[in-house]
Length: 610
Image (cartoon, rainbow, N blue to C red; front, side, top):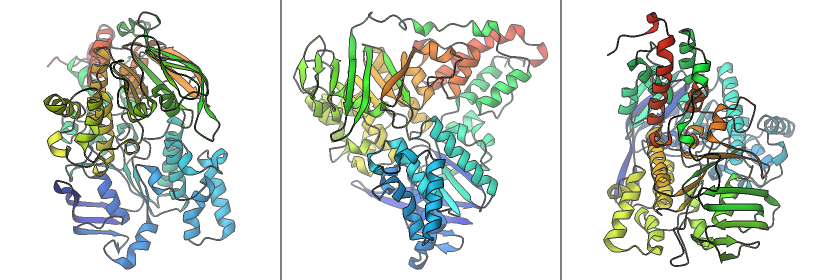
C-alpha cells in the first residue's frame, strides 16, 4: 500500500517559500486504480514526486509497501516499487538509443541478458517503436519520447505506476495503446496506479478520482460522483466535461437525461434509450459558422507554403513537398501521428527553419531555400531567430509579426522572470513604460495567471501547466500576429484550456491568424476553419471544419473529443461567434439538439420545465 499521511511541502521561489502541498492524506492499494486531477499548480506533480521518493516532504510521511521515503536505506526499494513517468519525458531519457533506453532499467535490476533481450523486443513491438530502436531518444518528437519513457518504465514491472499526464503528448493511436496497456495491468490486479490526467474521458474505468486544489485534496470518490456534478467540478477548479454541460442543458430544456453523466458515450446511449436516434431532421443541421470555409481568396494569405521540403541540420527532410495557405483572420488546425512533421511545419512557417526547396511567404516576408528572408508582399516578415522565439518582427515597421509557442515551453524561455519573458517581444515592437507593464499584465490575465503572484518568478520554477501558459501569453501578446501554437492545451486543466481558447478566439476575431497543432479535437474545432492531416512529412488530407465534422469515411481527419462526438451525432455545429469557450459550444449544441428533439419525444421522456 502507498500511504500518504499529513504531507506538507514548500518550494523555494524568488518571492520566498511557496506551499505546494498542505496536509495531504491518501492511500492507494496494490491493484487499485486512482486518477488524480486538479487545476495547474494544485500540487499534483509535487505529490507524484513525493510518492516516488524524488522529493522528501517537509512534514508528514510517505511509505510504499512499508518503505519510508525519508529513510536513505529505503530509497532504492521505493524507486523499484513505484515506477514514474514524468510529464516531460525528455527529463528521464538517459541513453543513446531507444533500445538501450528500454534495457537500461532492466540492466539495473540485474536481469539475465536473455530476459532483457526478450522484454525489450516485446516492448518495442507493443509500443510501435521497432522502427525507432536505433534512434537517439532526445531526437524524437515529444509524442515519441513519451512512448519510449512509458515503455521503459512498464518494462520493469513496478508494483505501483505513477504517471504524470502520460497521454498529453500522445496521438490517438498512442493514447489508445497506453490505455490498453493500463487495462491489461488492471486485469492482472497486482499493480497500483496513480494516474494524473486532465482528460475526464480517461477516468471512467478508475476506482477513484482524487481532485486537488491549492495543495489540498478536496474530493475523493467515484469518478461519476466527482465529475458528474457541474457545480462540484467548478468548486474543485475544474471545467465540466462537455457531456456534463450538455446533459445539464438538455435537462433544463425538458429532456429527461440522468444526472451524473460525464462521458459522451453514456449521454448518447441515454438519448437513444429515450428513442432519440440520429435522424434526417438532426442530420440536416447546417453550420452557420462556415461562412468563410470553402471560399479561398476572399482575404490575402497570412501564410503560404508552396512545395516546401525542410529538415534539421545533418538529417533527412522531415517535410516533403508541403503546400498550405492560411488567409488573414482564419485558423488552420494540423493533426497527425507523433513524428509526422507537425512541429517542423510550425518551425518552417515561423522562419526558424529555412526550406531546402519551395517557399514560405508570410505577408511580405518570403523565406527562400537556405533560410534567407526577403521582403515581398503586403504585411510583414520576421527574422528567423526572432521567429523561433515567438517575438514579433525584427525589421522595424514591416507588420504584426509572429507569435510562436513551442510544445516544450522551457526550450523557448530566455529571461530570468515571467515579466521579462513576455516583455522581450513587446519591447521589440516599441512598447515601453506603463504601456508595456499593462500589456504584460493583460497577456498573463488572458491565460489565467496573476502577474503579482508569479511576475518575479523564474519561468523555469513554475509547474508544467504554468510554463505552458506563460509561453502562450508571450505569443498571444503580439496582437494581430500570425500565431503558431504547438499543442497549446497540453498539460492544462479544463478552466485554463478554456481561457486559452477564449484568447485565441479573440485573436482571430480581431483580425489575427492562427496555425494550431493539437491532439485536442474539441479545441481545434473551436479555432480552426480548415484542417490538414500530416503523415510522414506530407499533407494527406485537407478539409473545412464542416467536412471534418460530418464525414463518415475512415480518415485521419475523423475527429475525437466530446464536442466532436456530439456534433457528429447531431449533424450541426454552433456559429463561430458563439465559440468563446467550450461551455458555450456545448450550450449552443444543446439548444440545437433540444429544438430538434422536443417535437419527436414521447411526453413521458420530458421533464417539467424549471
